[in-house]
Picture: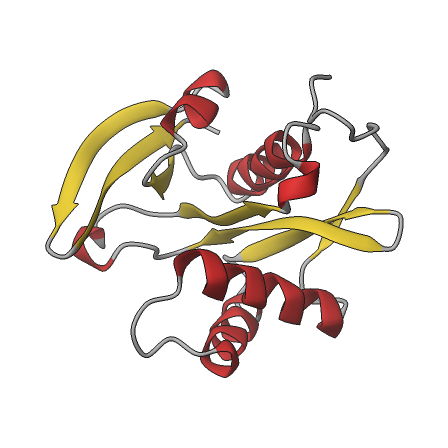
Length: 161
């Protein structure tokens, strides 16, 4: 397992997102910092995640090393307003900086892929502004690049879970 210099690889576990309120708040905080836009608030983000987790078609995971939350990801019905024709989506994949390169992100992606497969989905989509190589290494394929006024372009990718 390749890792960050100075970080000793540790075992991590994946748990359902939503079972631990503090973990859900931390995941929402990461998302707000990483992807938050104008008008986005922590309270609003928490509420959206909680609503999402109340539906049977959507789910999420939190990654832990010991008691520390180190990442998260979700299976969501909608992640890109301009492409409502595509669904479901791998969304909100986040790994804390100190734990990147330890396999946490790959495990989160595979867990969401597994949930999509269990739910009978033939395709799973994602958007990324800058992690195309990471997802391509996991077997994801290019769909399109979308230019968005005033924002960085994003790449849409897909896989057959």
